[in-house]
Image (tube, rainbow, N blue to C red; front, side, top):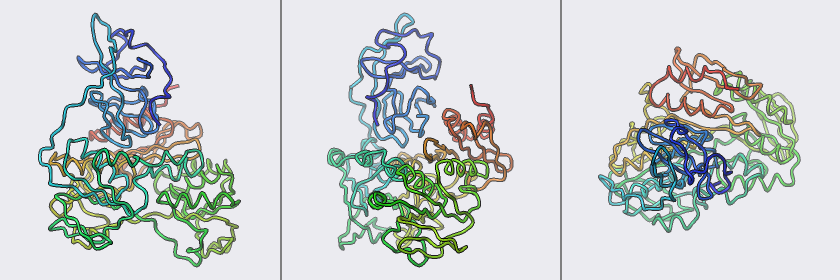
Length: 520
């Protein structure tokens, strides 16, 4: 998942490339010093950085330049062209950067730029920072604190026995058996020691005094901090039917859950997935990849129809059916036995393993008990500040004002949680940064990815451009004629362009991009 395996294509930048070949703001793929490199001309400057996203290896030459950042076409990570540093998730690692000399109409890479970056100085650093929740938002927050030059004490508290992990992979390649477990940790133990982050695992935070910013831990000890970032995430909703507590019934949220499902699946032949949600369908695809017979049970008449609309929902259903998944829709389980699931309609499904994916609830108990303002999430302003001074909230628990309408929204997306964590950390240091990123998530179903940008929890019009059958389409979601979100299949550049337009408040531009036919 790095840069080393990128193919060496295009011009040799060490030998030089004509400035005429560099189009303003368009990445050009080449190579230098044995590495794949992209070169970008912007105004009077030419930048050169590694060509492969440090997240999952996306091809940055197919990405989009926005300001001085280069955005990955796969999962929308953004890197600084000037420094190579990741400026927004899901990438954590920096790109290689290279020195460029422009002379006589030729741009030439003269070497790798390994000079230390200028030391940043936070404008208003607190005495210490405590981060509650070792998930995507929590990890992103501690990374951002150190990248911004914060030198004070940082502590990260997590309930689980392992550090922050690549949670989306738990229901995708890792569960399918096509990704090794060493891909799953976001950082190794050495990273926390090197960056002086106190990582406390198996540590439940049981109390919070908002006035003194003091945390009480399960062992009875307490810790006070100059600033706090709450990133307690969400917990899976449990199924409440007889037999839901049997040992072959699982939810999937943590690495331990995935390990247990994998162990059970090794000797299983038949699986029932309860819930036609994203997590449920990704689990279905993963278990089919492992060779299990899979049945999906869901209340919706069209899987994901309430989120993606009927057309895209029917496409996803047909895709799963083409891989052998059997759907039982418009019904729910009434009981679970040792080897079967009984549905409300009386049907009985044989099951060696049952996975429940019926949604999650934000874990707001700590904030609520502390007296923070809570309403279907922890209420924060555009800077992710809670109702208590010096305390921020990020990720699945945070409910922040929509940049489009100002109405509070809460979004359960992993990448958004990372970006929340970064902004919360910046503001804990006094940077006064508004959160204005468009929500983004991706879902993988066999070899078909779905990329989604925007906030379209409610819409009154859905339109499809391109062809879902040919797996090349953009689906737009509108409210009173205004494009608020788009989902796409193999239309990566358009997805990036729509994201940029939405973040600039250019909803007409987003609609125009979504309406374009795919290039042949």
